[in-house]
Image (cartoon, rainbow, N blue to C red):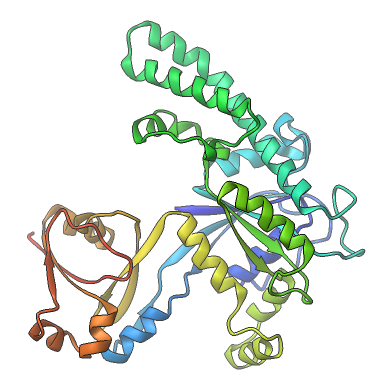
Length: 363
C-alpha cells in the first residue's frame, strides 16, 4: 500500500516529501515541474504504543511499521489533455492506493503560484476536475472493449459494462467516484483501471509558521470543502517540518518547543495517511524486538500472521492475544496469563488495532 503526494506546482509537495522521508537532498528549484519522475520513500509511522510495550517487555530494538510515499509532479489545468506532461503524471497517481493532496494555504510573493493567486478551494477543484476528466477518458476507452466481450456471454464482462456505465453516469454529475457506493464485487470488476477519483483523499494544508494550528481563513476554506466529502485535513508547515527533520534529536526537541509544538506535525500526518489507506497495526513483543505490523482493517488472524511469513498463514493454528491495557495493568505476559486475560483466538478472529499477539502454526 502506498500514498501519492499530489497538488499543483509550487505548493510544497517535494518539501513535504523530503521532510517526511528525512531527505537531506538540496531543495528543488522554485519553478513548475521540478519533479519529473516520481520519488519514492519510506516513512516510519510514529506509534507511542511501541515505547509503552517496551516498558514491560524490554527488547533489544523497537521496530515501527512504515508507509510508502510517492512524490508526484505538479498537476496543472489541462493535465487530462496532456498539458504539463499531464498524462505521464496521471499514470503515477493510478498506481497509488490513496492521495495526499497538498494545498497551499500561505501567502509568499517569492513563491510563484501557478494560477497567479492563492485560492485553496480553486486549487482542489482544479485537481479534482482533471482527475475526473481522466477517469472519464479511461472508462470511455474501456467501455467498447467490455461491451464486445459481453456480447459473447461473458458474465464478468456484462457486470463490468454495468459498473462502467454507473461510474460514467456518476462522473457526469461532477462528483468524484469516491462518493459513489459500489459493493465489493462491482469495485473488483473495475479495479484494474486505477480510477483516481475512487481513491481516498487526505488534504494537507501547507501553512506558514504564523498558522501552525491551521486556524487561518485559508485552512478553514479547505476544512469546509473537505467536510462535504467526508475527507480529513491536516495542517502542516512543510518548510518548518523540513528544517526540523534535518536536526539531530536534541536540537529537534528545542526547535519544537520554541515553535510551540509537542511533536512534528508530520507524525499526525503520517498516522492519518495510514488511517486513510485503511490500515492499522498489531504488535509482536519479545526480548529480541517489539515490532508493529501493518494489516488492513478487518484482517483475520491468519492474514495477520501471513504478514510475518506466508507459512504462518498456511499453517495457522491459533493466536494468543492480549491488549496494551492488559500489559500495563498486569506488567508481564506471565501475569496476564495467570489472570486469565490471555485470549486464544481462531481462524475467524478479526484483528483489532493494537492487539499484541503470538501465533502458533504447524510446518
